[in-house]
Image (cartoon, rainbow, N blue to C red):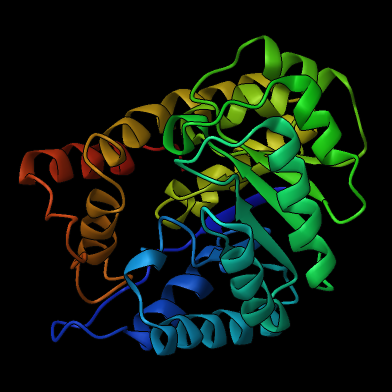
Length: 290
């Protein structure tokens, strides 16, 4: 649960089907570029828009690449309800090293309800969980005390922390030094989170620039603050462009432009990005330090 884990897009063919060959090419690119592991069926992978057979294809491709490279595969799972989250977790656990389970969204349950939810999902599978804390999407804020209680669960290996900034709760979470992984989920904050003690990151942008993200994590790990800051400052304009429109539309366009996937297609209700945004992201990518 350390280092940079690339959150993979799900490429589609021009006919609209899952493009297994492009997915394999992208996964290999990320790991060869220095990513510590892969994340499949996350939000970046448009998992809610995939059918069961398509989800299985994605998992099988990513599992095969992960085995070949000897790296972990984190698999997204979880919905708003506990029963359905358990069903998803059981279906996906056999091909996962860990499950990325989102905090129940929209319903805004109590903190106790959230803790019970993860305890129930964790007891139903034999792989560890990584709760996905993203309050600006779920509508449910977890303070540092609740996050630490969550990390204390035996079934939890770490947390993907994606609060949209670095506030008091994040500082308290990292200062607690629980021994469990805190993975940054906001691409733009990867470097400052690493400097504050985060174990690593789950980053969609690492699909496009795995070498730069891996080098930034390496610089932070070895105390080379100047090198890490240089990479952070260079990556920031690219990240800003990639997330200027609903993800992963801009990212997919850049990946297709780079030949890493065959088509930039996204599924409705997502929409193709504006060409100017893609141009801005490509320009920033080409300006990264080599």
